[in-house]
Length: 269
Length: 148
Image (cartoon, rainbow over all chains, first blue to last red; front, side):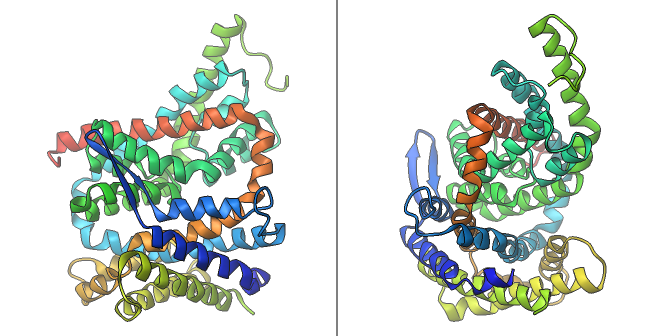
């Protein structure tokens, strides 16, 4: 950690990225009834990737490791700000409590879409690891505990975890925009759904939504944070007691349909 | 150097970067935003201290709770604190984080290549599935509660 702090180059690069991204500012494009929103944080992450050894080669492996090591601490300031978003709306959030709690079950939605798709693409036990949840840190830990991370299930969960890390923010920021264009769900519902257990995904969603609906921004932010905190508390139990058993059942069921036999012994790789 | 000093140094560096972004992007001058940023940094340091000296709960939990308590209706000084931190735009806080993450992401790209394109497709559906299903449930329940 100490070496990471002393890496002045990383801090200066971040300073430059922030200055450039904020100078460009929030870009909004009207599409039909809604709006597509691009936030400075998206430019910062994308330019950041291009500085890497694959493209511009400005940052070295050492710099990348140092930058990653600092991310969890930089998140703290945002978390403090999040607390101050929830505080003033505390009693309003209590009133919407049932919606906040029940929407957590929506996380199971990933199973019914993810597992059939994964199996259709030819994945086997990887499907269960990959699609039992949105694969954030607690889910990775759970799969690691039950199957081991070098198992097929472990490869699945790690794959989705890595994709989420790389594309998650961009994906959620854009998904919130696109869903608002469709006008199916109320912005508060879109805000609550953003709490999937990843602060950056939630932030991207809530950020886009508050740029699209400035008059509802405070409540949108408070709902997003409350929902994400709740996911952090119940996420592991949800995965362990409900989502993972359901994934295994659905997997066996689809396996019988696809291959006409019951699933082979799990060790058969 | 111990963990608490290290955390404090990083927080101050990030706070400084954020203040600049907050000025360029959202028009709050450094002087305007400084009290709010000082409050946020203090909350974080208190969180780190609480994690070490009170009970080993995740620091994030302490930090969110402290932020919530000082701005809750009925708590002395709540309006003052809420007013100060409102000068620090929450999007301004996200840009530095994603900048650090972006600089670091290159390190995950080889792992992504190994997992293959099928997992990339699956993960897009997984993210969509979670988000759309949760939004649908939230929408229906909020309607039933009469909140929307």
